[in-house]
Image (tube, rainbow, N blue to C red; front, side):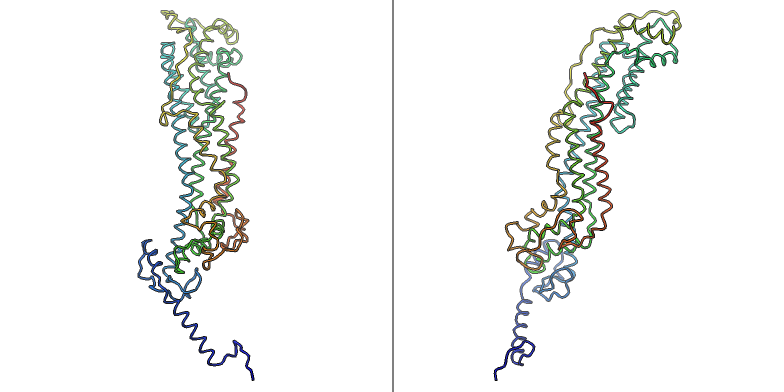
Length: 491
């Protein structure tokens, strides 16, 4: 009789042979050296007291395959924490370009705009002291207050540039009208009447309108750009401060340190495996991308405007010249203006008899003098064109950053295997090809992520807040280009 072989009905001899073979194979695996694992583990600064000398049974492992292993339970826990630390370091390294760019450009533009304002005030003081003498020095507070208020607006004040300039021209008109009519005594109410009819009288000609358009454009755009750069800096800083969930940590450990526990610490995770892990761990950050791109586009547009029609250098440099032109216009049309004021506000009382001032002290030099442009010396002697060009060069590569972040990390040869090395990488279980497809971007796409279990029904609250901050910042930047007070051509 011929007996058929059945694994369930083995003869005692066959079972004995199989048992011996299994024991021999297991003993051979258990005896494999853990020298490489111990070396890498020790180089990370960890004690080798709990690190096996040779592979042991892996039944105690919770994250890595339960084959024979070079990791104790304590090692697996330690390496799990290390994987989280490595992940956060990779995020910080990858985002450093953004954070540094926003921080440095914010500082440079802010320093530059502030010194432009300082130079404009200094230029006016030098120019007006020379041209107008006492007319300026006795009323310097009127001119100083203009720059105080412009700085206040630039720093985030609620007052508008239009209101600042309107108040300046009103106060200047009251002071000048008194000075050029020394034979009369004007009460506070009378001077208010003069200011009330300023729009009708147009004592300074079209200068106030032209200056309003030019200065409003420049200061509104400058403030918006600097605030936008600060927002970009803050968004990046907040977005990279991740709360790494337990499922993400498990996946990070499996891809980065399970090869070490397997006795092959130099084996890198397959590129697609790495992408799935990163896309799962960074799902919420990827959802920032759409609003982030809109924000970057808006920053570029405002930067372009600052280098063109909203040029802050030209606006700051023109303040003294245009104010001087306005004063000259009033002096040249004094008789007509005074006559109209007397018709609207009544005849003022004569002033008490006093020694007359010299015509030069009353009116100053009637010939307008243009100030010589003084090159800004901030930001290592740079100018606006250079700053704008540098900023745009930095901003454009930032588009798509959050969606491309998993690729940026996995393309680092210290983190993942080369995409061409598909058959000789860690696939999550052993050395070999990784077969699952790479999942899409964003939270919703993680529903079928094979590596990270993501609850797509629970959007991250902090990410939603960052999206809203980006949206608000983008709308503020776009609003700059549509401000009602800066419509119309400037001359």
